Image (cartoon, rainbow, N blue to C red; front, side, top):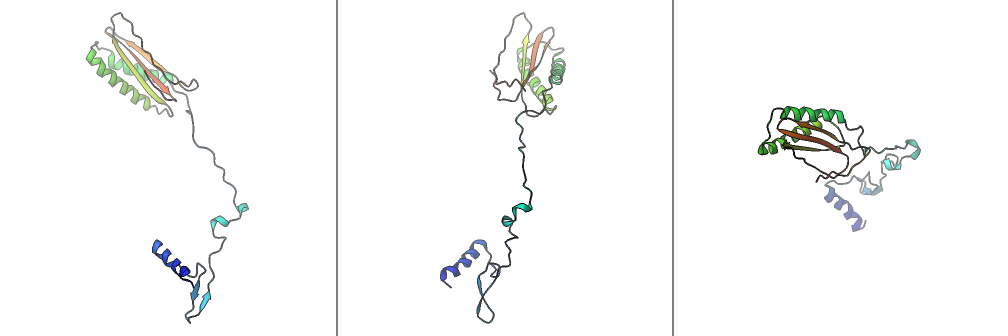
Length: 181
């Protein structure tokens, strides 16, 4: 046997940490009497999964499982009720103060966002906008821009007024990337 063929099992033994069994690989082995004999592999080609008959199994077809859009519409009446409840409960008897309204705006946004998330509306991103202003006879204009998908995107809003302040709350669900300005 050449040196090259003898070194091959030794290299495999070093790499894997196991010595190959002579009988399973069809190599020449020595008989206890000292003579060499040919051994036969005991592994059948039918046991190998790559060699099965193609007609024995039915082909498996797999469908795409991803969903690109929402499965149900955004519930505008339910979100409008949340806006009405939160704005009324937080601002019913409050007077306008500039410092207080900055903190209250953040608090109200977080409360609205948490309550809308509790509705478990999948595949929408939510943008909550809350504006608090003093009632002194002036007007205010707010604008924003976004990518709008007319088949899925919508808007829920509610405005609240008492004797001292006004507030406008808005929840915009979007299936597209939203940028507010």
